[in-house]
Length: 66
Image (tube, rainbow, N blue to C red; front, side, top):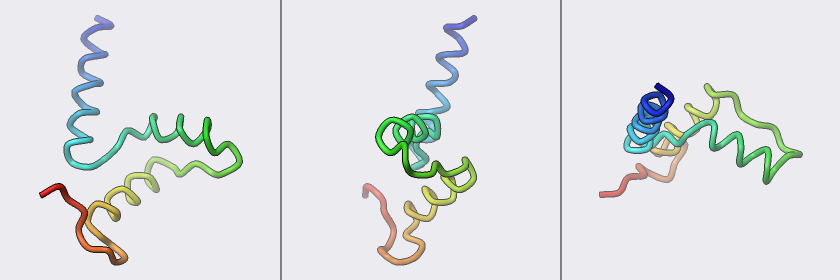
């Protein structure tokens, strides 16, 4: 059962990465390890920031691979 949950979690993460949404848990772990003196965005802030960056909100144009 644990293996199935792990596989489903990895599939979800892969899907999010494919549409440009990095893993929030990875972001939090990175911030706590490398920037412990700086605040960590909430999931909602993180999601919005990633979407804005992907679609070029605030200048800079659209960020895409093709």
